[in-house]
Length: 443
Image 1 (cartoon, rainbow, N blue to C red):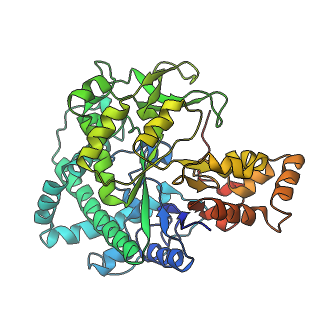
Image 2 (tube, one colour; image 1 turned 90 degrees about the vertical axis):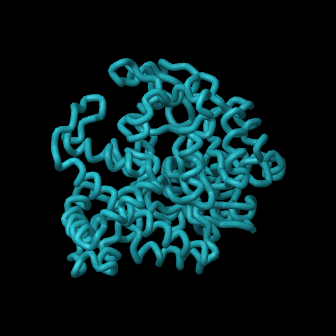
């Protein structure tokens, strides 16, 4: 039986009276459920402000938190709202625009109350402690003034409304960080550790790029010369063109990779364990000329590898990291991972066929600290995965698991029995169908 068990459950998927999950009472209820069910970890997706495609992997900031996670009930409890808002009719999927339209008027009322009680002084102290969040507030305020256009199209700001917008966003970030810290503390008191997710790349239209352009490969007009993605792999025969800007590692080396390391250090303050998405890019990263939409037109480049991680662990020797080491990898990626004794990941939807060939032999090839999953946020639910298997494959699965009543439950039990740490997506615990899949990597 696994020594440690975890649940993958994004914040936005929590039950919510206002169209989306948040840091309110339902989050605390989930922690209680996690504890009662015998889990040890709560794994999240990035908490950062969503941008293009509602993706937290293309965020406006690596330091700020998505504003929709503010709990309106908490604002009432703090005295910033007089009464609890009416409930927004909810659907099975988050409607981000509708949720924001509903919650924003209440946010503004709460901000006005906060300011009337001397809130500016609080924000001054807050920004001195978190200068990157001030950068985010300035960045997103500019975006609003320029009708949400990307930063490389902006002109000089000539309005007095700008600073008030900055303060408004700072207020929300002040509340969000306080709410998150209290929720995180509650998790730890219950014996639950939080696994946070940090993307390797940042979004082009982000505070990081706007304020640190020299750290990215951009032309004289601020446009990306190369963008991120991956070559054809198990997720897509055509590869994937993500569109994130590429780091200028030659320049970064001179400042000790400060931007990347600072992002990771901050994440280690928010979470107990940091999962680095697309870990392999520290060894080799894929670049696609920005003018091409075809992800197959690209090449692999050598990353900063040991040079960066040596500097990171000099500053944070006890930082806990999970390396997302999936996909077609060259051996050097695993050598980098193992050099720092970082746990990697094993996805049963991919590897169950290897287990079938020689269970004990395959198990011996795994690192003791390898973390098992049925699937991640990028994978199908087990229900959907099974529906896409051939009759022969389903027959093989049934035979391997001893003809169980539920292959979903059998895969969970198998993972529990064969990994020291095993993490299950909430959809698979609940036997939810294919349409509840979180993300489908595109081609």
